[in-house]
Image 1 (cartoon, rainbow, N blue to C red):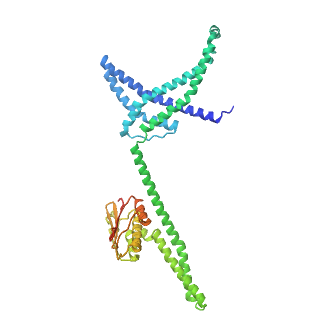
Image 2: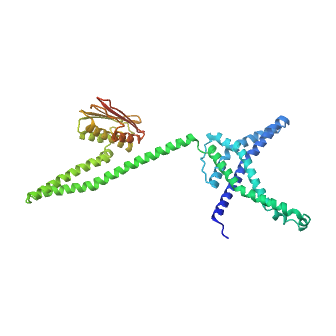
Image 3: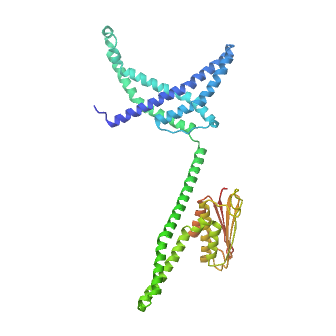
Length: 416
């Protein structure tokens, strides 16, 4: 005979709930018995003094302390193995929560557990009362012929009680899970701290992954498409220099294709530098910013002050390298800021970039002598800069009053 799936699931759930409650009763009953023992000993010292009572108290009180702390791990196993609820491993400094559950809440829960298990046993006994009757000698049944009607009532009552046991057991299990999570689970402050830590790690991973992807794209463009364009430009230049007997129209076509190839190479170079400049990895932030200042369309005064105190064995004039993500953010902030100055800063004649490392903070300041009026909340460029800075837990500030000057200040964390 096949059991219907719904009935099978209900039986499995009921067996799990009963096992969970029975295991909890065992773990909760021990502190209750210890409590009763300690109370009896204390009452004995008041009403019936005994020379052995202080010795027994000296033994029972530490045992109660050990039970309040040592039963936490069995409780964690009970929740995990029988209900799939994972409770954190509490430190010894959180012993108040463990005492509260094992010594105060547990003895209260054991009353409900005992009542439920007693109801289950009584229901089973009442539902099978007619079976028990057939186990007694036949002479008793002949002498007590009226047992059928009360036995039928008891059977019906037992079946009704059995039908009430699964929802009651499920409710008690849910209550214990709720109480266990509230007392032995992660506190609200710990949960928020853990979530902040997880979000920080995931964001750092996303930033590193994005930076690695930009490096890969830059490397693929440099080694692939850029090399093909250079080869094409060389071939067109060679054709332009050697094929002098071609008609003028053909020479004009080759000349135009040569110029287009060189323009494409220049645009691709700018694109590659915008993705991730190779000089940033090879020579560091100072050299990369020097290249930006040299290519800027207006005069840029650059000052980079990085510490040179390195561990022994390394060159003394080699500045300390920061995390690649921090260097990349600093580079792109300066690059975007200089681009914005060239495009939008009216009447700007010069710019100044100062990069200073103060302890565990990298400070980048970009200023220009334009007419000001830049609004950080108005355009997507400045919003993008602020978001890029915040991606590494940096701070972004901007001052641009009407009439100028404009100053952008960025602080990036860079632990030693």
